[in-house]
Length: 330
Image (cartoon, rainbow, N blue to C red; front, side, top):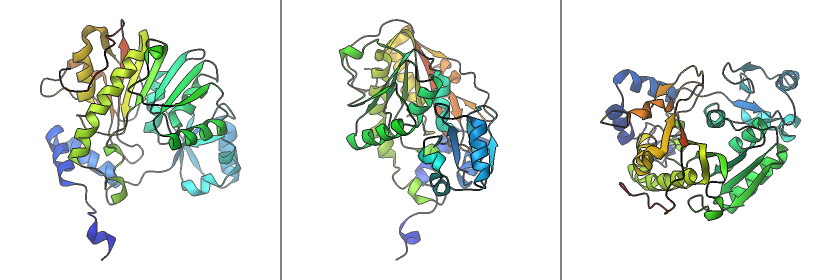
């Protein structure tokens, strides 16, 4: 029996129905159209090793055409090559650029780490955002990159070395339990949380949504809450935490942030995100959601970008130190 008869080529019915329950018809149609479109390869120039002009010239010499990205000078859209061709180039092997989706570049831009700061990257592997932040910090300061999997941590170390990142320490551990020594020690924290990956679904490519189920979402939400609580307690008073996912599921996005706002009250605030993306939606506040959630950033799936959620938070004063269990109202 062929794989097309044993695996559904359409998106899961429960997923599509939840889209229709959360958004209006025009928004749903737009997202579904974005999931039908094959996205181009995109990359980020590693400014620790080279510059954009030199990278464009090297790609042109290899017969590869690229397009600049208006909202991020270090990003390029590849017009006529797939990843395998780029990976064969010496510039790739030497770490002159990193293959990375455009949406994935947004959370570090929102966090905006500065040279000399101390930054925590929770769930850091394989390292796209860790290396991006190191470049933004000009290899000055310190990044602690946490990863639960020892195998993925080795991949992270490899990518850091290839990109010539010298300020990042990789630690294998559970981001939910950073320990008292990490409490309030960081200027900024990035939590790109494990999620259901709905923003990366491509209609007809079963591998992008074969894993999905409503049960998976229910299992992930407590983990996401615990990770966010840990990230918030790790930042110093006045520091910034960015919570992001590559899913469009409100339970994993606005629901997790709203849980944190309810848990920590006025010690926590949502900050506006000033980034001139070509397509951005506000966070959902329907059904009595916290009005500040509108300040969050949603990137709808499109022909060039995966669906993403990004929320910027400031911790105004030290938070309670008891570890959360991630349950509602805890």
